[in-house]
Length: 593
Image (tube, rainbow, N blue to C red):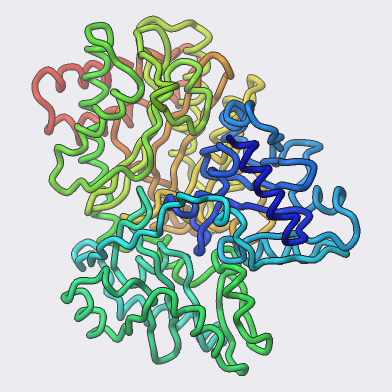
């Protein structure tokens, strides 16, 4: 089926005089997670991961993806002609390098400009002696039963949850615009728009956002969205706050008439190429992360308090789930999918729980080694008491968003498995307790989490942590833990108090098992000395680690003390919500080491 689609694409490429066609993983807003309408790369390749670029020439088809998906992509591509390109590995060229080397002078590179971000499109356009054609959605011509774009109801996040009103947020944004001498700000990232306006939606699964664009000038605010998705109360409130609502597709006509003398601030990583091309060439462009992105990353006091409460609720749900799993794995039949459904039941017991914050990952045994594994009816393992099961999940509550990973030992595990689990645990604990000078980035701190694995010759092919939104995307910029600098310097952001970031080292042994342990950390001020402001973290996630998988003999006294402190905090915060049997179990777990 995949090869037939690629053949059909090549026929269209020949008709359109295109030598190479590039299909990124994106929608019109540079989103990481996509609605079904925009899953063109998945449709053409069969690869279901959240990151990757497919390139089809008249002779080859290749898929680039990152280390999180090497195992998964290899499995999903094996019955097609598509070649896996392991991005970032030694000797593997980038998409642009490949095209430059393999296409002859004068070749035409095609792509859909509406679903290719301007930064990526410009890189393609800069390939020497090549031409681009960006007004062709060839996949749309092949995909006969392509799902339509769905616009679902939009709702307003009340001030007691948002913490800061729209007028306050837009005033801060305009202050940043004035500092940059920008007349107009174009917001294209869906979570930024949702944060600024305090609205939420359901247009993309797991992401409470709505398809929209926003334009902010010195005096006006324009929101381009599906007007039928708003109720009268929300429209009235936005109007009272000075927001004018336009139809979603009107953005393309709007940008065409932006005056030539305008200084326009936009982010080319989330602005699609068709929008950029529609702007008059005389308009001065400021290309950098929007002020909304930076303001959103630093949670306000109300958001922080709510996130603390969300993590208590989530901690209760996940702790009760682990108790259930440990006590029933040998008594009843379980599968990866049924386990995920059971965890969802525990979260739904809270009235303010809304939905998962991403598709739950349950990887038993060797499936745990697939970093972002997704169980299907065809791959669904029966879970037994003889290996690790890795469970990465999260929830959206009205009070905020959670993301947690626990690897659970079911039955007896080997000394080697305990060694690996303990190394990952040590990295998690040490990063959570790091103390550092203000000005440090995630690159400065990533080594703390990797060091226990590096010292025994192991590593993991993903970042150690990502930012997390407030009832928004579970992955948000700019804060992150990673050991390599990014080409875009704005992605190498300093940590600031109020940022929430995941702490998730892991190790993945293909064909055997995977281990990942993840907590969310709140950056806080710690101490001021003659050397400056020191920062650190408070751990938000409140779920015990699996003491059955820990080898205390390879932990230092300091590391054991950190574990005890964390487990005492878990017991204090979570035990009041448990029944007697669950309390007794949690006490044993938290006080055992």
